[in-house]
Length: 479
Image (cartoon, rainbow, N blue to C red; front, side, top):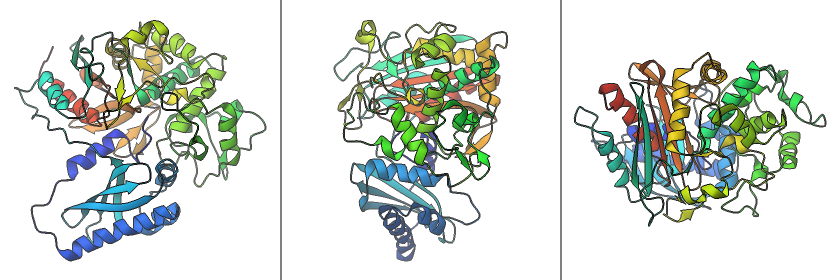
């Protein structure tokens, strides 16, 4: 789960790749135009005129509507932008600033069109050190890529698993904490939003069992006292929750509270809070039209699924995924006997950020609660690559990966999973981020290759590392 950005991890990488200082001199007029756009964005953002921001600053012929609730979510969590400083310009079209918000500093990156008439992209994202990875060639190794990642001052521990030619391998670096021993195959990490693919795969199996359908209205599974969840005649369905087209913000406004605690920030979000939000939510566009990443929407889906039996979310994860796939060290809430194997998370300031506990009243576990090990996740990855239709999981995996194709940030969104064009192939992938952990998993089904990356540090370069490893596996046999 990511709580501070407009983007998934990949979109950050696209900006990192594209944002290179220009080799020619920037005119004062061009800098002034970029600064003007940045100032206009900040003014409207601070006034909470999010719809006006989109309508006035972005091109009329492109649909940026899905960003409105995400900008609202950033303001709700991090507050106003107090200052823009340290500008860097890349040609006449791009600029990067350090944005000082009430809660923290972020990069603020904007790109204008060729005439500098409109903003064609903008991004608020965490400030981190750039990782300098080696070139992918015949001399490159996974070890070299991992060591480049570990050279970052923000790195703590790193575990990698790969699949190639029907074989698996694991790699471990750094420490389970800043003073801890090197991680092992037994080391447990938070996987964050990769949990969402668990939720949608469980959904796919429940659809096979006839318990529900993608087209079912969400209201069918919630109290009768709720008003109809719809925009005009377009009703909110299960599919809209599963492919991020619900129009819901990433986190609802009533999520933020002064009573949250670092190790259990979701414990306060009870069913009553879900119903309070849904009872007052106004749809500003039709569900299904555009994709907009929503932790709340996927969390609501997990809440609905676990109520169908009814069982705990942990129990349906066990019944549908971890028991069939032999994943004995994968949990929602870590049992006492596994504490000794738990890595300790770290934020960008290298302060300890312990695993989230997800207290007993928590409702949004389906968005990001799972913890796991590299070997367990390799079993999950292998089953998603093979899609063995002789098994319930294999059928569900194929359905979850192919049942939807909604454009989103250079990808297409299936049920939970994202599809990214990659050279002459397509990567199926997801990432995750919590207070002190980052994760990435991706695979290319036709080539039978895949990677899982888990780290107990807050470096968003896990996505880049994962893609580079996939590129390496495409280029040569590693195993």
